[in-house]
Image 1: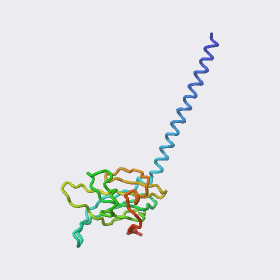
Image 2: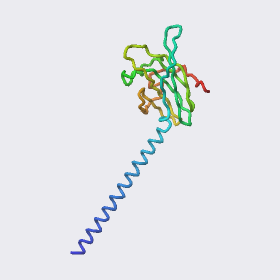
Image 3: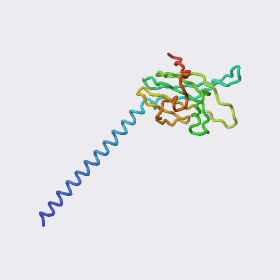
Image 4: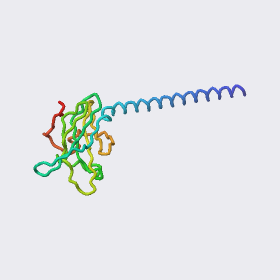
Length: 175
């Protein structure tokens, strides 16, 4: 009878060892996937934009405001489209195929750019914000919503917004 219990103990020990190896491999894989996801998002997490207080009205009566675009990474971002949006509106309100209320920069080098952007009409209750879409140095496309959420998008920024080439891409003012 003692021999049977020894076999059961051996099998139980082997099963516990196998389970521990499986759990360790699963945890290691999960950690590696998280590191890969973080590495993929590294540059995109460091690119953001906001409205500044600078404002003027042009001869046609359109309002222009300041846009600050910050690339805190050490690499250039490409095909950046900044759009003035009403933060209260639809999540995809900026996907209208129009060039209104947009700034298109062919590239955004590391550092801070300050440019003008056409402002939304001053409708009552308007909460203006800036949404940006851009391509990182690795060729991945991203959208940072007006309230800060970063989302990877499948299309390049121009296609995402329904814009057709050729487009009036501007060069960074620091170039």
